Image (tube, rainbow, N blue to C red; front, side, top):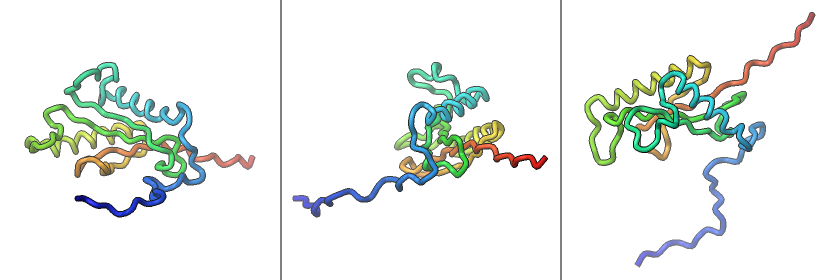
Length: 155
């Protein structure tokens, strides 16, 4: 027989800390506008096909773009997303199988190509480990910072 301790009265351990002051809560379509913008840039650069071509089982490489909650954005950011690169089918990680020779290097190199393309469009990009995914799974945290405020002319 399996026994468990008594249940807690309340779950007081939030998944994420309370929102910080100064960051708006996501509301309306503006929250997702950054994801649409970045996805469009990736299509423009030829790094992911248009969504209409990704129907069914897609074997080619593509990128997924997810809107990140504003609480995770750096100060002065106007958008924040997480980009995951999915390589060609032959280089994808498979449960219970070993990677084909060179697959890890291929995935790492392609992620760098995606990061450099996004930097070329003016985004701030950092490579991050994806928590909750398989060990070693990396993604790109992408932000666009607001332009610096202009000082008033003293003319």
